[in-house]
Amino acid sequence: MMDELVAVGTELMRGINADAVLRQLRAESTMTVSALAKKVGLSRQAVTRSLVALEAEGLVEFSAPERNATKVGRPAQRVRFRAEAGCVLGLSISPQDVRVAVSDLAGAILTTETVQLDAGTSGAEGVETLVTTVQRATANADIWFATVGAPGIVDLHAQVIKLIPSMPGLAGDIVVRRLSDVLTCPVYLDNDVKLATQGERWRGAQRREDSVVMIHWGERVGAGIVMQGELYRGASNDSGDIGFLDLLAGETRTNPDGLGPFEDWVGADEIVRLAGLEGTFEEVLKAYGEGHPAAVSAIETVAGRFAKGVAAIRSILDPQLVVIGGPMARCGEPLLEAIRAHLEHQPLNQPPLAVSSLGDDAVVYGALHHCLAEIERTRFERVRSSIRRAAARGPLPAEAPPAAIPEGEAHG
Image (cartoon, rainbow, N blue to C red; front, top):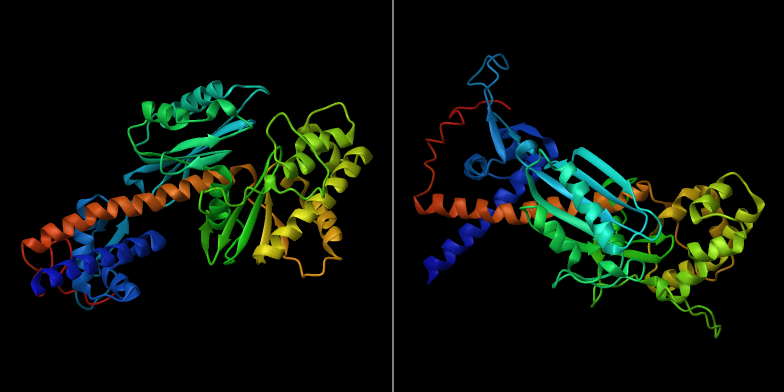
């Protein structure tokens, strides 16, 4: 029994070692083996064992020693992460557009494509546009994992959209099912705002705070919540659905499109109505940027209403930062100043406000980030299996590392 426990513990530790080695290589791209061992705090033999398993999976590559690098001892052996070994696919679908991005395994963007959707496009038509866009973008790519973000409440376990008032035709499994028809890799579905929050923290303006609320503000209003550095989903994966906040103090507003009370009060339709201009929401935002009095008045009015939602969030979560994303983020600093003005007299100190630095691309960046996390998780299982098989054949001799790594590396 003790031998079995030791074996299991050894396998677990070797798997953890492989995780550490690969994470470090992904961060540094290329390193010498001894420098890598020093960085991750492992023995050279432990790092060697992990590298051999990772090489078998095609994730790392040894390069020829640099013969002119040193005059003492054997030249340092270098190893690099093979970011080109595969690709991941990030997707977003909304009433306005579909967005597709392909990156390598280091997160470097290889291909992007955005297709605008006509007003009134059905959910089924939108999905078919997404599918054809994916086919174009991935024609020459080896996709290992795909993640798609969609508005609405998503059942992560069943991978279906339970509620999506803005695109009711996407309810159910149609998104995952159609993408699975054209992709040979796993396809994962998540709420778009939650992915956007992850994307903003990953590739945004250094959003490293441990508690952040990112609010998507457009036709609909929803939030992604980060607590203690982790995305908080709630019991039903719909935490942050602040569009359903009711702050109207007895006033009844009904919306046939299924909007919640708060998003009906501050969302795109209400902004267009208050502006009284002949035009779309996008045209009102453009007019606001140009200083049109009617557009400025409308957005300042909803900024006051929106501030009430920020104050409610602050009283419950007290986040370090509130980030505004979605179409309203295009209003920039003037919008933030209008909201701050309405928060000045709140009894509690209010969190700093910022606009998303990724804009409409936050969802696809979050989708790519999720893909890369899944690659680490799933491919590591194969690496661990490889390590277990190697362990079953016996330990690596301390005096005889694999031929790919010179025995007497003295520097690096």
